[in-house]
Length: 115
Length: 115
Picture 1 (tube, each protein chain N blue to C red):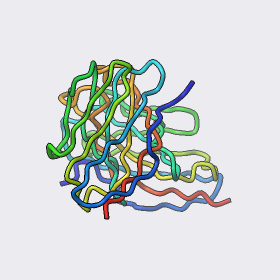
Picture 2: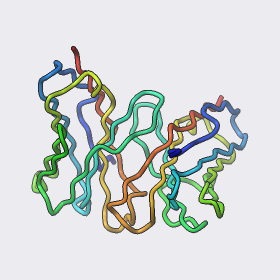
Picture 3: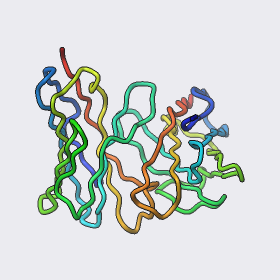
Picture 4: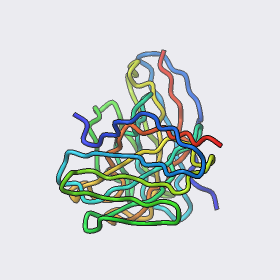
């Protein structure tokens, strides 16, 4: 049973560029959440998708956007990259939205470096 | 302002002894708490959780204690094993946060268990 898969594993971009990160949830999961983990920090919630809609959003600017596809996979897009966007981006999936005891399963993340 | 604080960046313990990892929170609305473990180059994995209606939850070698009046929780690992060496994140969620997708994480504590 495949867990949460993310691609690419590493990415190097230049300031001002745009980036797209991809995530496939664990088999059977329908909800995807994205987190940003800066160096030395804990993961910080970006947003969550369920039924192809953004359901919750953390304190991130509109440069961060996402999408969920009918097969539950998801993309995170970041426009106008800043040096401070350099971080590990984690995707997490769960079974359904609204149930607070559902466990999150994390992927290994995409390490984004902005130069 | 950090709502979930792990004030010890690192902890070193001898194999077979007890490891105690601490976590403090400031938001009294938090009612669900979780611990995640993270190995290098892997995503966080769920370890154990506790609801605010309880003060203790056990799962094998892992026990989480919650002191709501002090807004403090701790994770006990007994006995500690070298394979427990990892970064441990404390996380919390509030009712208005919806499902587990919206978690507030601490900065983590790096546990080293020495043989």
